[in-house]
Amino acid sequence: MKKESKLFNIKAAGFLVLALSLVVFAGASAVLEVNGSQYEICNGKDDNGDGRADEGANCDHYLSYLIDKTIHPVAVSLRDQFIGATNFQLAGIERLLNPAKKIHNNAIFKSRRQDLHYLAYRLEGEASFEPQAVVIENQFETRTVFAQKPRYLLTPTGKRESGLSLERVLSRLPESVISKVLATIAPPVPKNANHYLCYDVEPYDIAAGIVARDQFQSKKFEVLRARYLCNPVEKTHNEKVSEIVDRDNHIMCYEVMPHNQVNRKVLTNDQFGLNSQKVIQTEEICVPTIKTHLEEPTCIQPDEEGTAVIFAEDKQFQTTGGHLVVVPSALGTAGVTADGTLMSGPDTVIQRSGSPAEGETYLFDTEILSMSLSSGRTLSIPTQGQITTGPRTPGNPVQSFDTDMLQLQGQLPPGDPDFDLLRITAGSGFGLPSPGHTTLTQRPDGNWNVDSFFDITYRIDFVGALGGSLAGQSGSTTSTIRLQGSCLRN
Image (tube, rainbow, N blue to C red):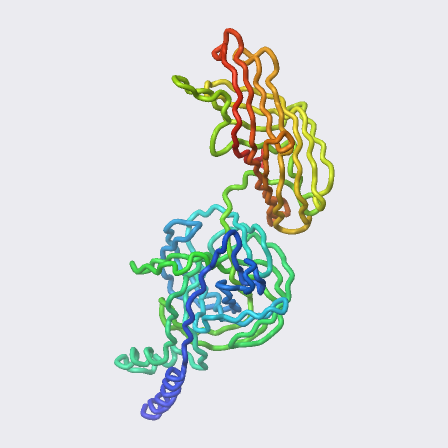
C-alpha cells in the first residue's frame, strides 16, 4: 500500500503542477453591434461599411468531437426563443466542442475564449415541438432553415488533457482527501458564457473548404452538410437558474470530412461535475451565426430558374395598419372606411415582361379590389394596373429588391345602391408615389418565401347615389396605406 500511495503522490503532484501552470484567458463575450440597418457578422468582411471587418462580431469557432459516454440521467428545465420552460432528461454525453482557429476564404478567425469548451448532452423527453423557420447568416451562407427538434444541451466546460482515468485514481484514495484532489486537478468551469440548446435542422448540403486548428490537430476539412442550430438557452437544474448571457450569439454546426481519429483522454468540468472523457474523432465545425426568427410564411412560391414569380394569380395584397378612407368623417358622421384585398378574379389577365436580372414589368387587367366597408357591405371593384421590379440575381439564396406600383385604377360598375361613382387611383404614374419592396428567401426544399409590400398613395373619389345612404354627398380623399402580399395557396 505504501508503494501505491507513493506512486499516486507522484501522479497527483503532476496534476498539481499542471493545475498551477494553467493560464486561463477569459475574454469578454462579443456582443452583436447594429449600425443603422447594417451589422457585422463574422465573415472577414466590412458589413457595415465603417472600414473595419468583423467589428464587435462574435468570432468564436469550435471543432466538435465524438464522445460516447453514458451518464446517470439528469433532469433539467430549458427555455429559449422557441420553447417555454420544458423538462428534459440528459441521457448521455456525445460531443466535446474545442475552441478553434479557422481559416476560410483567406480570412483568419481566432477564438477569444480559449478557456471555453462545451459538452453536448443528448436530450430525451416527450415535449412536443413544432418546427421553426428562421433565417441564418454566417460566413458560409444566408438561408432559411427549419429547426426540427431539440437534440443537445451545450454546457460551458473547462477541459484539461489527461492520460489517467479519473475514476480509477479516485477509487484508490481515502474519502478524506478526494475533495482536495478534485479541487486541485479540476479545470475551472468558464464563467460569463451562454448555454445552448441545439436543434436538428432539415438537412441540406453545402460545399466549403476550411483549415481548422485546435489543441488536438491542425487540418484541412471539407464542410459537407448542415446538422444543428444552437440557440442561447436558460437552464434550470436543482432550482439553480443559469441565465442567458448574450441572446444574439447563436451557433450553426456543419458536418466535416475527414472524421479524423484523435483518441485523446481529457478531464472535463462543467456544472454537472468533473469527468474523464475519451475524445474519439472529428465530427463538425460550429460557427458563429446570426438568426432571424420568421413568422409563419404568408407566401411560398415554387422555384423558377433560381428565383420566383413576384405577381401571379395566386398572389394577393391586403391593407394593413389602417383602413382605406372612402367617405371622410365629418361633424356628426363617422364616415366610411374599408379593408381592401387586391386579388385575381375569374377574368384576370397578367402579362409579364423583362427578366429578373434586368427588372420585370407585370401588367394586370380585371383584378378585383375587394373592399369590406365599415357599413357592413363588401364591394368588388375591377381594377387594372402595372407593377415594376428592380433587378435581382437568380440563384442567390436571399434576393432583396425594390418594386413600384406604377399604376392602379379601378371603378365600381354602375347600378350600386349607395354610389353613383366610386373610383380608386394609385401609383407613381398618376403622381401618387407607391413604392414597395420584395425579399425572396430560399427554403431548404428549393421553393421561396416571398415577403412583399407596397406603400400606396391612393385617391378615392365618390358620389352618393340618389335614394341611397350617401345621397347628396360627394368628395375625394388622398392618403397612404400599406398593401402586404400573401398567397391564396401555400
